[in-house]
Image (cartoon, rainbow, N blue to C red):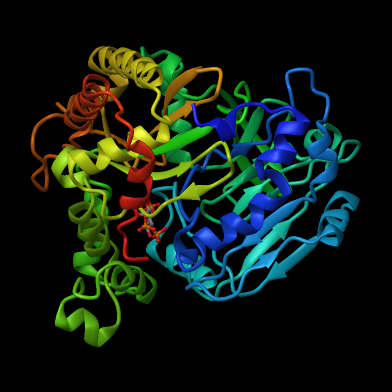
Amino acid sequence: MPKECRRKSSKESVLSGTGINEGPRLERRTAGKASHICDDLIRNAAQIAPSSATGVPTVMDARRLPQVTITPEGGGSSREMQQEDWDDAVDGTLRRKLSNSSISSTGSSAVESEDDLLSDNESKSKGIITLEHLVDSGESKPWWKLKTIVNWPFSVTQRRKLNWVQLAGHKGNFKAADEGNILKKFSENEMQCFEKLRDDTLLPFVPGYHGTVEKDGESFLHMTDLLVNFDLPNVMDCKMGVRTYLEEELVRARERPKPREDLYKKMVEVDSEGPTPQEHSQQGVTKPRYMQWRETMSSTNTLGFRIEGIKKCDGTCRTNFKKTRSKQDVIKVFKDFVGGNVDIIKSYLSRLTEIQQALKKSEFFKQHEVIGSSLLFIHDHTRKAQVWIIDFGKTTALPEGQTLNHDIPWQEGNREDGYLWGLENLIHTLESVSSEGMGEDYKENSQTTETDGQ
Ligand code: I3P
């Protein structure tokens, strides 16, 4: 385990230079990669873990100021959260827009129109980030969502008030719920999936679903918070399959092409040669074109899965894996993610094998095109490790009687998604990590994999 993720005595914490001193250091480390830090990761939120096994705040907890670094689009200045912001937040008065920051997107619903997506992205590209503080009657349950590096040194009391923090996602996608649960923005598609999954072999591998609820005039899916039983969890999101867009999105873009400037900019940021001359001149690319480009740049096309983002127990969050493409690239990232601990890899492997078996038996899986779904890897310093199947917003039922193999090549019209092929490659990749061993250089690898050109 990385040393920094073990629970420390207050003395150790003070001496180690983590804690209050860590924020600025992290900020410096990530400056210049600002627009991609925590953009896409962990739509199921980062749980505020209890301070210690006993729940007693450490001395560091008491000494450290709440610290949030807002990272602006395209680098530039950043802003640390001040004590008064925090005071505002816990008082229940904060609803503040901070300019020059951005929220990126993940986990959308297939029911959204391209126009909706455009308007959502327009606000994102204007760099507006909203800190929303929502208070339930009776009990204070603030909810913030930030694109940020977070170092949450809150006391236990404060932690209880702040159920969890969402680092990214489509605006308004998540809200805090009752203890151990979260609310995810309603999607008809996803709801239908959860309803069908109630009687499926995949049930033990998907987040608990407790129906829909209304809050502040909006509908949400009431779900188990997967991070709740972990102590300072490390989380990785792997998007599964060889294709990340629906066939219907492709058809729509062909019939009514809508070049998007935000996607063009994201493409250029990673590869200035990416857009065609025509796309350069119109300063826009269509969504399927962008998604296909993302697939070829990353390991989606070559391995049938890709790493979307990682949040580590020290609060750092990386999403600059757009060019993490080869098996060796992925191995390096996994080694760093588990902090060189082969036992965690073995636990993940065993869970992935169970998932693979369950998928092969699943009626739900046979009857659905699974697009944009992720495997969420979670482990902590106790070596507890789990993998969950998440995000069914773009998982769609096939016509009656039709089934998919999930391991044969996609051709437009056959709706194959390559999920099982990707899972097999993922398992082989982790087997390689396990058999290769970690070596001494896994820490270095975390530096060398930052290859997005961001
Ligand atoms: C985004 C990513 C998301 C996608 C989003 C893309 O690209 O592919 O999966 O949302 O589309 O911008 P990136 O990872 O490079 O940031 P959906 O899965 O919901 O389609 P969007 O911009 O239309 O939200």
